[in-house]
Length: 138
Image (cartoon, helix red, strand yellow):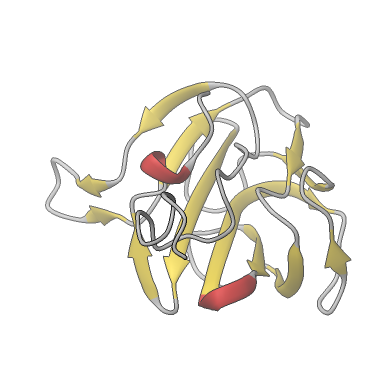
């Protein structure tokens, strides 16, 4: 027998938690300069704790990706990946298992940004999707 919830959403993991609480300064989608924002940018004070949106495994932690600064990528169930960019400090390493809500970094302005913030992305495989519908209320 099917439950009422079956088939309503592609995310089986429920609502994701926001990595930080703050003001959204850039949403997902086309920017005025013709580029595309693959995530959501949230302004926060320097050094704010950045929390894992969901339990997962650290797939990447480093600063090699141009523009992202200190970046953490978490791999979750069903091919979902979350990304957390512009950290001042990274507190996890590749291969670490993290719990939902665990502090994985400290917010900063590494990479190409002019104010402390967290650039948060949700990807299904390699494809960025707007995280907003999948998140708890900010």
